Image (cartoon, rainbow, N blue to C red):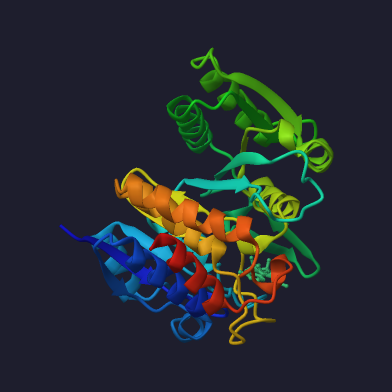
Length: 335
Ligand code: ATP
């Protein structure tokens, strides 16, 4: 039986990296029927900020999406569509593996990085609850609930147990936000107590940022509320050379949407130079989710081999290759 997957190319560099990713998926031989659904800045402006019905309808049916970046119109008053999608399908766990590629020159060459970020995906300052009290005074509500905190912690610990990871670090600012981040931490501690074989520790987000830059190899699984997860993900991407590399999975109990950490990169859109690695690695995570483990491993290895060889890399990671040339190299490796 072929898998049905909703393909949302997005905008900016989205359609370029999506096309490249569909090509490598085809080369794995895994049968996938694509349902293409458009989601972009123009449609959002036209719809008054709502997610277009065909996207919702398709994802409700297929339950699996592969998604390129979508530009959020800045200061338009609209909620981010990415945030809206995560809420609509209750994709509460955002999982982002950050790993160094062999052969790629980084500042951390001697200390390979292999960490996974688990970011709560539905609340915190992304609840979209902002209010102008009087002209010149705005409040933005940070919402932390027990339910969401426990389930992201459980997701991270269960994952750690399943794949044999050794340590979970919860990241917070409970010294300042004693109630909100305090609740998040209490939930993490409760869950940690049920997993005695996994080491558990906590770091304040500012200290965690410094430790990540100084000793990234010491981190294993990082567990955090939404906003810190957003910021730390980009920081971690910087450790392994850039946003073009880091994949992501938005997981719910029923639905899953796989997308790169990077945005729509309007500065390089349409030039054929975008790095499709992040979406390709997201696609490898999607294959795992679909139960296609062998194909997932082959795709991941093909990408890693192209990096190890170092001849067909895109500009963002110090090479000269176009999106197409890099993609062809991955397909050659798959063959
Ligand atoms: P958003 O707010 O939507 O997350 P952003 O403003 O953080 O987006 P990005 O669009 O992710 O920013 O781009 C940040 C920088 O990284 C840009 O200079 C962009 O060109 C570069 N970049 C991001 N993704 C890629 C990629 N896949 N290939 C090459 N360069 C990229």
